[in-house]
Image (cartoon, rainbow, N blue to C red; front, side, top):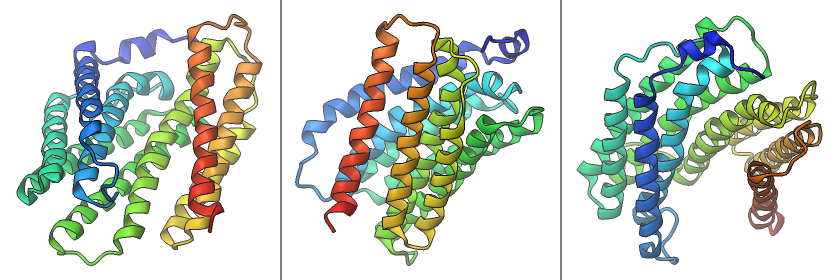
Length: 298
C-alpha cells in the first residue's frame, strides 16, 4: 500500500504526535524503574499494584497508541482526523491525569485518584468521540475500518467501566461485582481497544512493509467475530468461554500475520522481520499460558 498525497496532506503536525511519543518514552522508563518496588506478593486488586499497572498501560501503551492514531487515521481510513483543535489540551489533561491516578493509587490517596481518574476519563472520552466522528469522512468501508470502529466503541465502554470500578473500590459509592467488572474493563480496554487497533492497522502496515499483495483476510474476519463474541460473553459472566474465544481470536491474528509474511515479496529477513516474528511468538505463548493458568487447571 502506497501513501497517497491526500493521506500525506491530512497528516497532523509532528509536533503533536511527538508529544505523545516523548511522554510515553519517559513514562516507560519510570514504570520500568518502579517495577522492582512492586512487591510480588501484592494482590492484583490492591491499589499499589494497580498504580504500577496503570502507569505502564496508560502512560506508555495507550500514550503511544493515541499519538499514533493521529498519524494513522488518514492513512488507514483515508479520511482526516475529525479535528485537531484542543488536541494539546487533551494531551496535557491525559498526561496529568495518568500521573495523578497512578500516584494516587500507589499512595492510597483518594482525592488524587479521583482527580486523576476523572481527567483520564474526560480526555479519553473526548478523544474517543473525535476518533469515532472521523468515520464520517470514510468513503470505503472494509474489514480494517470495522476493526478501528469497534476499537473506539470498546474504548468508551472500557474506560466507563474503569471509572465505575475506581469509585466502587475507593468509596463504595457504587455497588459492583469488582472481579467481574475488572475482567470486563481489562478485556474491553486491552482486548478490544488495543488489540483491535493492532489487528486492524496490521492489515495495512504488514502487507505494505512486507510487499505482500492479494493476501486473504479470512483469518482476520473469523478473529474479529470470535473476539466480538468474547466481549459479549464477558457481559453474561461466561468468562471461561470468553477466554477461549479471545485465545482463538489472538491465534487467528497470528495466523493472519504469518500468512502475510509467507506471501511477502521482500524476502530479506532483517530486523523488522525478526521483531514481528518474536512478537507473534510471544502472543502464542501468552495465550497458552493464559488458558492453562486461567481455564485449563480448573
